[in-house]
Length: 253
Ligand code: CMP
Image (cartoon, rainbow, N blue to C red; front, side):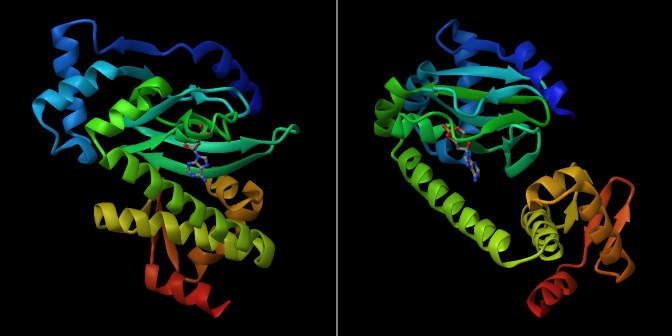
C-alpha cells in the first residue's frame, strides 16, 4: 500500500462501526461471550463480565483502516478480539518502519491512556478487525474488576521495551542481512510456538523489510540467498523456515 492509499484510507475509515455494549441485552450478551474468549477474562464471574461489557464498546474496522494515528491525542485503549494490526511509524518522506504486528488477543493504545502523551505510533488494521475500546475514565474500575488487566499491561510494556532494545541493538550493531534474518527468525518462531509450524504467512517482502529497517529490494535479495542456502523455502505466499539452520547462521555472524 502506498502512502497515498494510506492517507485516503485514514480519511475514509476513521469512524468504525461501533456498538455500545449498553445498547441492548443481546449486544451485552454478545460482549460477554467475546470477552470470555479473551484469556485474561476467562475466569471472571458472569456479573463481572457484564459490568465490564457495559464499560466497553465493540468496534469493527476494515482492512487498511487507521485505528490510532501517531501524535494524535488519545484517551482510549483497545482490546483486539479478532484480526491483526500493524504498529508502525511513517517518516515525512513516506518511509515506513514497522514496530510490530499484533494478533488477537492483544491490546494497544494503553500508552497514551496511562501517560496522557500523544499516540506513539500508527496502528493500522492489516485484516478486518474487531475490538473493544475502553475509555481512560473507566480504566481504574476495569482494573478493580479484573486485576489481571493491570498485570497484563505491565507485562506487555516490559516485553515491548525488551523488543525495542533488541531492535535498537540490531540497528546500531548489525547490518541489513542480520536484521532481516532476525525478523524472519522471530516471526517463524512465533508461528512455531502458536501453530506448530515455522512459517511466515500474510507478510510480504515489503512487510519484512519495514520490520527490519531496510528496503524491499534488499530484503528480497537476502531472502532469496537464504533460500539458495536451504535455510528457508518459499511455497506460494508462505515462507517455511528451518529454525535450527537460521539460528546457527545468526549465531555465526
Ligand atoms: P499509544 O502510544 O497510546 O498508541 C500507539 C500504540 O502502539 C501504543 O500506545 C502501544 O499500545 C502500541 N505500541 C507502541 N510501540 C509498540 C511496540 N514497539 N510494539 C507493540 N506495540 C507498540
